[in-house]
Image (cartoon, rainbow over all chains, first blue to last red; front, side, top):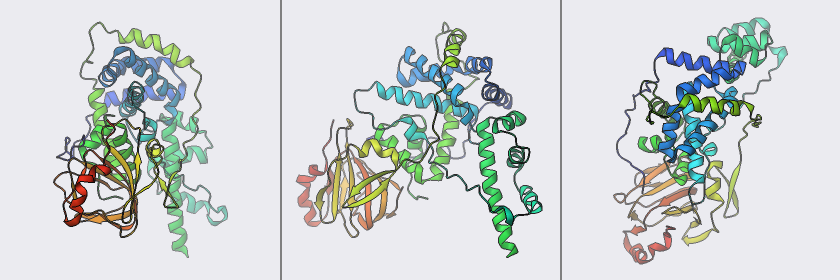
Length: 209
Length: 230
């Protein structure tokens, strides 16, 4: 059949060479402008940089230039409309955009086959859903001092996000602009931070018993 | 956490979008069980992204291809499209009715489950639900073995890929639990025995070949276990 069971094609230690820091920063900044400021010029700039490579990749995957252009258009649309879900803690901009283009090629490629489609890219490539942490706590149990002590135990990015959203009462959008990161990253830092905060408080509460 | 994983080359093909539908769904289902492979796929996607979108290399396109004009053309259209509201993702539940029980299975298998037929009694405590109308050149079955049920010693004339969905079974090589992804080839001779009621999805590309005792009498009929669509 089609499965190889032999040795790895890629060394386990091999890490992605995802370009130099300047390139990464440039792509990151364009994403922030797209998501936080709805900056059309940034969208155009991002795809002037990446577009030809996406078209070349799509031609290899789906076989013809006009379909490849459709893949490019869909990828641009997804970046414009779903950029708020991009989470820089999970993947670099380049990787996120690659997965969008790959998924479009996967679905469009199957649409053109004569056999039934058994799975869509969204179903196959969506990570299993992470459970949302329970955010509720019994307010009366925690003093402000205890809470601030627990906050100090969080990594800086999570502490910053929680401070802006919960202590300064910023919206996720405002926090994204202040920190210069996509809104999806703010949300995930708040979520992970709240989960960790809960664990810290639980541990301290039980220590006091 | 699972102990038996797709090989790195399979995960690489998955991350490139190159596997066929059934293997894509099986690997996708395995990832739902396995953090380790999810992390590996993320790593491989980053490797692929760096390769495919390598800014240091000129794109593999004709010199006449004018990306600036194309992007300028597309960008107005893209930003003027009505925003598609995406609902927050919720875990979809999918289950199969097996011997009067509802067993939950990963939702990525929905396209395969909906093509699965009635459960047939194969032998002893073993039942089979063949998957039809998939258009691929091999046989796909859901297999259910009640606790203690077994399949006589056999090899495979090709490859068999098995994804454990519920329960457990063991053979000479080890014991397997939900999420485990097993690849067996012609070199592997085994007797699977269910240690708990066990639901699996099995893909084979050639008939089983029974190698022990009276079960060898089944060999002329082993194609009953194998009906290729292609």
